[in-house]
Image (cartoon, rainbow, N blue to C red):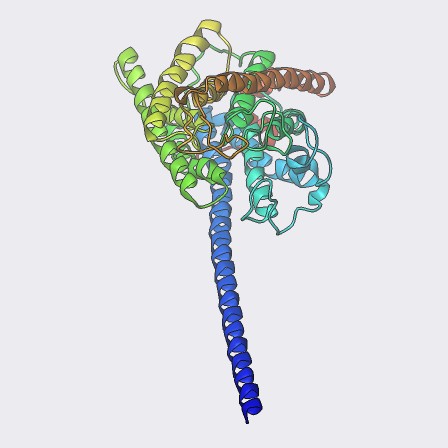
Length: 465
């Protein structure tokens, strides 16, 4: 009897232990499923924000930049100017799929990526952990494409109303490959010389493209303006914008789209995106006040064109800093950008007499350089703890936190962007000029590029009989 009782007790204990094990296993399974659901929800939120940001950045080129630049030229060049932005939306997209993305973000050396991702090979729907652990690699790729599109489009403002469309196409293809792709790799690519997030030799803080986008395009714009020379009649003949209304709409679209540009560079829908969004807005508003205020003091009245130009200057200057500074620093950066960029456009351009048609250098070159250097001053580890020691302790980010060396890193990044833009652009311009010519003949410039380059007009006025 005792033996049977012991057996029964043993069986009972085994059953209880088995049920407890099953319950624990079930709890573990439920916990694992819950954790997976949370991770999936975060990934979905991040991916949704990044796809939205991609669309916002594309909107910055067309219609934003197309309208902004289109309104600033004379009416005989409005379609040609807008066509430049639109054509680049298609042209750069094809190049990006063929090999551009691979050169910018594929594994390579400190200066350029390799050809591992040619034709988007191995760019799939799983995350690329070096860039973002929560969004598909293809989402990251398409988001970065939108930056590659708008950057060369910014240069068009410098040679507006006088470059052949065919020459523009060839120039932009070569410029994207020889200037943009290497600079993007150095700052943002794996193994890049200037990559602050992945251990570059000179870690340059550039959250959304101060050096990659604005310094390279703005400096290249100045080189183009100097190489092509002035428009016929400049500066003696009046060449006012044919429609500030179009430019006003374009500037507003740029302001809205820029939230995708800067806040999207957080590569997720978290608090860093919020911080970049807020910094972007306040810097832009302060820059409008700075530019309009300076113009008001100098001319006795603020202009609409000045106000929208100030907004773009603020957007440019906050771009490298947007993910590293808080609202107070953003206000200071924006105010400085509005005043400095107004000075570059109103005084410096007039002093030296170069014909930067739509002030691409005065706004993007000067504003991008200023913003990149101010990032080294105001960057805060409380906003973005990007620098850490071997033990994982957060290190200071900018000068005001005690990291004076960061100013040197910023200067190196800006200097490389300047040299690459100047040398690369000069070589490309000379090559295109020798093979096919850059500038339209005088009679075509007088006629206007709408008719001479595209055989159509932006405005057909019907005259009543």
